[in-house]
Length: 202
Image: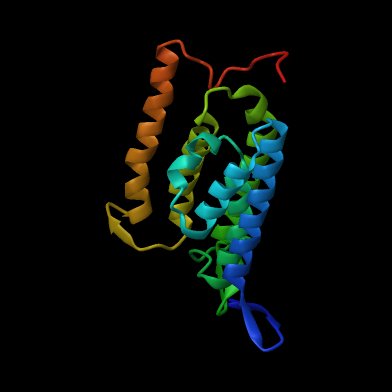
């Protein structure tokens, strides 16, 4: 593992913090670009964003902005910080394993980085034109991530607490079920706005 990425004069730059900051900056860049495209960018939104990044106090006010794929991009970059500083995963014999103390292990954080990168591309090029209901793009992202995270937990190496499952998995079961019921109910009611394609619309 590499807890220090590089040094600036005599001050260490922590690897994890560096990639978290890089991911946050990438997310902000995507957010600003998308807000400008939708003619939604003004000084008030920038203050809300800045405040939420600093202390999280404005998180509730960002709910209308969760349609943007910036979260996935930030996570894709930030997971590299976890990869360099935390235990990567369970032992494996797969050829792409990474070695830590001589033990080949699943690069679980790289799996997640690849997933988040794919989600960013999917949400950016498919989701933006087709998902019209405010907040649904983020809900789709959460549902996909919940399913992926449940599966990757099996190779992540977290402590098993009950029935062969980790704490995150026990939380993800009701969370995934709740999101699935939400979208299923929408379909039953005939409201397909979040998932249906709208041909010919920008």
